[in-house]
Length: 432
Picture (cartoon, one colour):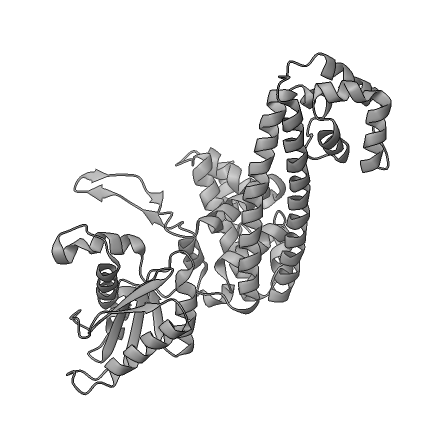
């Protein structure tokens, strides 16, 4: 069976024009080589706009139709580094024009650019020719740009990740302020950033001085503005007594109160936005047609299931579940030389966020899914080659990929009796 590199090399013939493009925000560079890596046309630059895109297409067509060049080019492969977001518009435009667009790993470009001149010098022109020659050597991949509902899911997932980062950063900042000015508040409210009553307190009278000034009746009146069923008078008296014995600092109270009030309002806004995003993710997930299979697995929710689909795109574009595992960076690698051999580790050469959501799934399923919990305990407690907890999580994550892929491919629902398989159950029972 031919490996992927050989297949890529066979796709590059004497009639293949290879274009290396160094993508940037404003000015982009392109260089043209043939199947041997020999430069056959002048270096051109073009703007990152429609006129620039039309110029690069015109240059490609000029090379293909040139009567001066020895070769006749009837196939074009355009390589670029798919980093950031600048490459997407160009790749989409060229793809619509019928050209084959491929990606080159930026790390490979960094390492290979010294081969020509033995110099680490970096410039856009140099990067463009390096990219073209890497494509010539078959060192490229076909980037996946999700379409239709999977593009919507990808955008929603990325938006949620961005909101969660801001949400968590804001919570940490609020906690830091409370630790400085009123560290005892946790004795009254275990989770002051989650309850409506405690959030109202943080807006109006977050520090001991303001709590004491407002008094019991004033605090009760403020809480009633936020919740229909107010907290009891006993709780309010506990808050006042705690405030009287607080060790929090007493300087800069006015500005700290204003800052905290604004941050609490922002936190509430972010929570509403997260709820809106998550509802949209659920609706988009239903449109894929795979919600029933994925959500039928105990331990997988709407957010994790939708994020999984957002990261991989259409599951049916994969030939098997191993391709998804490799996409996540779960393929094993070994570092060995001669008689020296190291243990195997996962490569992590894949989508980081896919590994994150699989970890979240694994963590939840180990606690809530009896079959996965049983497998996890077997992996870490077996007599021969017991796994560390992190290693077991990787195995569980790959198992989750297999389960989801199998259910979607067979268009069937989750059956607990089939998760582990007869042979594995026999081995686990024997080891028990």
